[in-house]
Every structure is written in C-alpha cells, then in structure tokens.
Image 1 (cartoon, rainbow, N blue to C red):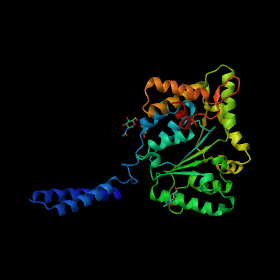
Image 2 (cartoon, rainbow, N blue to C red):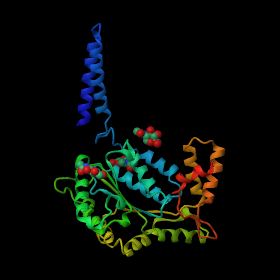
Image 3 (cartoon, helix red, strand yellow):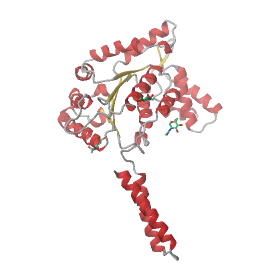
Image 4 (cartoon, rainbow, N blue to C red):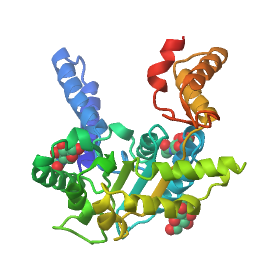
Length: 333
Ligand SMILES: *[C@@H]1O[C@H](CO)[C@@H](O)[C@H](O)[C@H]1NC(C)=O
Ligand SMILES: *[C@@H]1O[C@H](CO)[C@@H](O)[C@H](O)[C@H]1NC(C)=O
Ligand SMILES: *[C@@H]1O[C@H](CO)[C@@H](O)[C@H](O)[C@H]1NC(C)=O
C-alpha cells in the first residue's frame, strides 16, 4: 500500500516537475519547493516497506553465500539451504518456518542467520522486519518474567500484523526462561490464525549451544577413525542432538514445548571448526580490510595458529571457532 502510494506520489511529482519545466523562467522558490517535495517522495519511495521490492528471496544467492562464506559447515549449509528454499517457495505454508541452530560458540550460527536474512530482506539484518532477541539483554530478570512474556507476545503479534514475512532470531535460546519459551509456542504452531493474525509466513530461528558437546564428540569420533568430516551425516548427530537437548535440565520446557510437539522443523548442527576453517575466516576478514593476498595469508595464518585448539595434544578443533578473529587480527599487523 505504502509503496503504491509512494510511487504514485513520485509519478505526480515528476509530471508536475515537467509541466513547470515548460515555463520560463522558473523561479528559484518553485524549484526549491519541488526539490523538497521530490526529496520527500523519493524518501517514501526508498523507505523500507513490507512488499516484494524489499522482501524477495534470492535462492541462488543463499546457496552461493552458504557455499562460499559459511566455512566448514557442510551439514548446516545443506539443511538451511533446503529448509529456507522449500519454505520460501511455498505459497501457503502450513506453519511458520522454525529452525533450531546448535553448536559451540564461533561455529557460525549467527553468521548463518545473517546470510538467511540477507537473501530474503534487501536490508538484511538491518531490516525493520528482522528482530533479534538475546535472553540476557532483553529478558534478564527472572522476576519480571510475566512482563517479558506479555511484551514478547505483543511484539511478535504487532510485528507480524505489520508484516507477515517477519523474521525472529532468538539468541542464547538455552538461557531463555522456560516460561518465555512457552509463551511463544502458539506462534510456531499450525494455526491458521490466532486472534485474526496468521503467523505462517514468519521465520523463527533459535540459536543455542545446547547439544554442542554431542556434536563435538561426533566430529572427534570421525576424526579419530580417520574419516573425513564431510562424511558426517545428519543422522549421525540428529538423534544424539535431540536427546541431549532433551536431557538438558535447563531446556526441559523447551523439550516439552517445542520438540515433543514437533514445532521445530529443522535441527541444524554446527560442527567444531578446524584450523583450515579458522584460517578461511581470518582470510575473509583480512580481505575485507583490503589487505593484499600475501599479507592477508601471513596474518591469517598467525591469527588462526595462535588460537586455542583441543584436544590439547592434537589441536584438532578450535575452542572458540572464528569468534575472536575480528578483535585479534590487528594485533598481528
Ligand atoms: C541473487 O544472488 C546472486 C548471487 O549473490 C546475485 O548475483 C544476484 O544478483 C542476486 N539476485 C537478485 C535479484 O538480487
Ligand atoms: C518452486 O516450486 C516450483 C513448483 O511450485 C518448482 O517448479 C520449482 O522448482 C521450485 N523451486 C525451488 C527453488 O525449489
Ligand atoms: C516489533 O518488535 C520490536 C522488538 O524487536 C518492538 O520494539 C516493537 O515494538 C515491535 N513492534 C510492534 C508493532 O509490536
């Protein structure tokens, strides 16, 4: 609606401008007036709105970004690509898309979420239709849980009413109060409408470390057996993953609410990163600084090499993944 209005407005302005242009001489005042109106029109025209000019899924873009920028995560890339593509290609989805991303810190969960956002919203993570919640930032005090619940429900409802294709990212899901998780449960379900609002076109992404140890164990087992990490399949971690989220005391309600009810559509494991992946992350960071290839390679190697790895003797997996690179590389230049 707003877009149609804005473009109509712009159209009228252009006609007015050309008509005025036919008169000679044009006074400065008129020019300035038209300039201001035109600027306003253009602003409206450019302002993000909930329509296909601002929200358009780029399937090849997502595939390419996952393949070339999300390092060392063949499973996550594959699952996310399929899930998002399938969902965005459905005209009338039966429920919102719910992804649960699991893995240790620095393995790319946030980054992968950003890649999804970038290939759906023109403004990417900056889009007004993308909402990020962090339990410790947005819902820090257990005593205020009732307020948080109401607030969160209102936010979700308000935002989805504004734009059905909204995206909600919940960081540190494993630190979320169970009651809060419970309060968002209805929005993830198959309801056609809740209070007149349909949530079926929304996307919910949960990020957590829950199950991270299991994923690491699996990766380590493969490594010890001399098998390549690309051989790891979803079935190798999936059962263990649901079980561990299942058994985690803190996420007990998460289990009963989301997993038992099959509200989560996809569990996405993020594997621990090896030196070569951290090196790739570091290279990408250096190259983004316009560093030449030789210098970038030297520094990326230093940065990646100095990070802690485990198990201690073999140094197979990076303890913090790609996490601290952004803050560390300058030290090496
Ligand atoms: C989709 O992404 C690809 C790869 O990043 C890019 O070349 C292409 O221009 C994008 N298409 C649109 C419509 O933005
Ligand atoms: C989207 O769905 C149509 C059929 O509805 C199918 O032909 C097409 O291949 C699908 N595209 C993707 C990217 O899955
Ligand atoms: C949308 O969500 C944001 C939080 O991300 C909140 O501040 C805002 O009030 C919500 N908008 C509506 C209309 O509820």
